[in-house]
Amino acid sequence: MPKKRKSWQEKLMDSKDLPRVERISPKMAGRWGTKAGDTVVIPAPIEVDEIMKRVPYGRLITINQIREILAKKHNATICCPITAGIFARIAAEASAEMAKEGKRNITPYWRTLKAGGVINEKYPGGVEAQKEVLEKEGHRVISKGKKYVVADFEKYLVKL
Image (cartoon, rainbow, N blue to C red):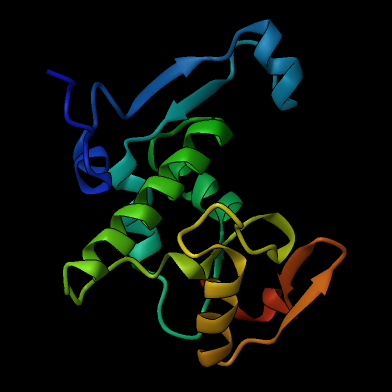
């Protein structure tokens, strides 16, 4: 019998052995612009979600801000950009799943942007759904080439 796939909510709650702080290898140091011997935190998915949940109506946060918060929290040089991005996606999908179940207190994932104020096309509903919610919250969304960006997003960044 095939194994049942985990729901997004189950993935969000599955911390495995995370968070974990590790030394950065010379190979990764070059890729990440750090020094060998610096440290990287691999956060737990729920930690990314908890930060995303704290962004109030009308405000925004970038994935890089989330990474800075997590690096500081764990006393690490940086937060892993790959896992932080994956876990933000898991938080977004879990939130959409909860909304479909009629739950009210969901993570406002549409307020978490990529670097430069870019809307994350991998979040539930894609760019169009997020654009709609962000505009309802008072933001102006503009297209820049193939990407959609929140205009003057810097003015709305939250300080957590």
